[in-house]
Length: 497
Image 1 (tube, rainbow, N blue to C red):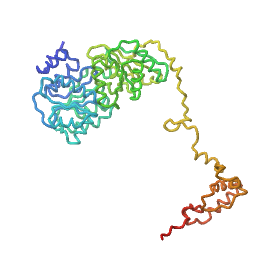
Image 2 (cartoon, helix red, strand yellow):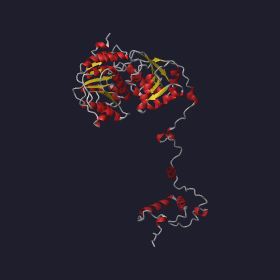
Image 3 (cartoon, rainbow, N blue to C red):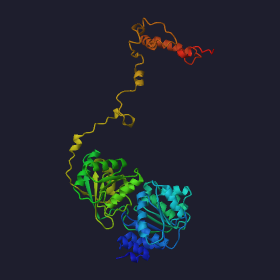
């Protein structure tokens, strides 16, 4: 059996590895480390949880140990798709480089840029970053990339999913063509293949497992939920959790709003749960992950921001509250358990609305999860039924419209006179037969418009048409107000004395 001592690593690196408790490399580490130490490009294809972080971190430390850093000119870059993954790589680098005088900087969004710039000014050997923040600092002339010797791209297929490929291409072009590139991905879609063909030079392809395969150490279960109502899933999840002994578990949802709702629901029913997704403050996300790693938090309810690359060794259970839209994400989600030779359990809640996505998952992993029989009480759904939604009663934004707009009512009945208070208008003034001659410009007869409306309504349609024809042929008055000049404009101008 191969040991780390057989891979060509130096004494300081081996000492740091030994202090972490590892002595036997994983398959990807065994094959990638010797090649990376020679300076050749590496294309590593391995499922999540196989130890890819150490596969590029250890040889990078060994190669950088002989050189020296300069201000704003890093010698190595590690690109990660998410802030959490970048932070995890930084922790691994700090752990493995503890016996070397190497400086590193973590460049991610959501935290102070001033602190990051101050660190860059002092000089760092390694940048561990997300693509957006690195380019932001480059555009501000805070970092130079012409001294990069080693470039690592981790979780490349996740970069594709998150739309980072144009940023990756730009970063590649900003770095020297003589650099060494270590490129890792769990899957190889066409866009990723094109990227490797464009920027890697005769890479050594290392594939330790079939792309998008699930770990054999993970037992997969399927719990069918017979209702489309999302509340039924929450009931089924709580019932399932009550039957298990869980030390650490992750619940995955497709939408961020569902992450918050499910976490709140679990907490309400006495489960130790907290949410994590991309809309939360970065400091809160870090605090939540730290509590989860330490065991202070039992259930982490997450979006796919936590599905890839996060190394949390003690996760024993993974729950898919939703079947992911992309089948690859199912592999990455359940890969949070069963890591480093451990066993794990993965549960999938399947409602009728998830069948289409579930078929894609089965086609990808080529195996079906074991059906789980669980007696779940869905009576709460009948006790608190939701009011039926009628599309005809909903306007834009879901607002209920009980009545037509007032302008539409007036358009439907133009001849209907408005109600006038009897205290303000006498009966004689309302009656068309006894109406007084209209006084133009007077403000003391508010019933005049109503009288005209009543008269017009009483006339035959033919008479109204003749009048409208006469009005059309009548020359227009120079007065913009027509025959209804406001009374205040008829007053004389005040004379100064």
